[in-house]
Length: 304
Image (cartoon, rainbow, N blue to C red; front, side, top):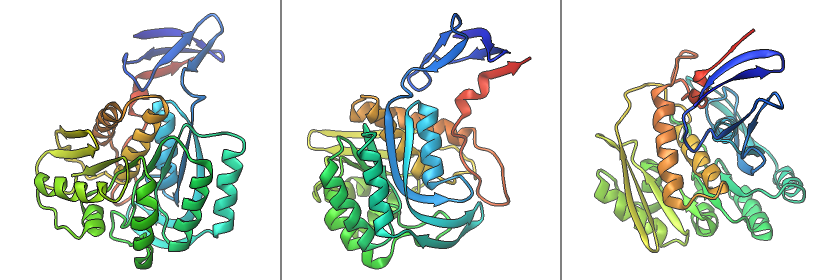
């Protein structure tokens, strides 16, 4: 769809695909562009990435790119860039609980994503708070190790993650190393992914998505639940800039669930989104750069 008009005195030509994540309503009479679903609130509870490629920053960019209103609860501050993570400082349980309360008491999220929660105490605090508010969709991305190899989950916190947080999730989205850590199963194939996914499903979540990006071959993810089993396969994109891919796909699924899509559609659309975001990734910094969260906007050209 080609749209032309003026926005705040600026002439624009915009080329948008007629797909599900950029449903723009062009209001030429009113002189504005309205993002149709932007008032649908979505919440991320995770750590901050000072370089902007992963964590809270990646989640909020993803929410915005897909078209929902992003909100955040910060659990930790990290000092990191494209070359690695250099320091982590957790926030107190009190300020984390206060952030959650402030959000839910005023703006109830349609869906919630939980990422980096590094200590056993923080996990218990978040679990107890989530039980109080009981969001319709709770997506848990069990962040354990950064792409550069820095541990983001204390060893003593793994038990609480498995015992308390994973069972209350609507969807859990471990990658291969995380699924191995949770289950103790070595994963070398899609068959192994299925076995590990089934073991995680038995912990209590409604759905499990095991992400196979760490394996060789095509990018294969396995979704399973009570009455569902789906394998999603896409071409592997040979790009070095994959910082924040796990955060991005889990927050994309969260946004699509908030918009009312079923679990299979949400995963399928998110898989498409992350594949194209990787394909459009770019070099910034001296290490592993980010994916391009806003690649869909590249067709938007403003001119005076």
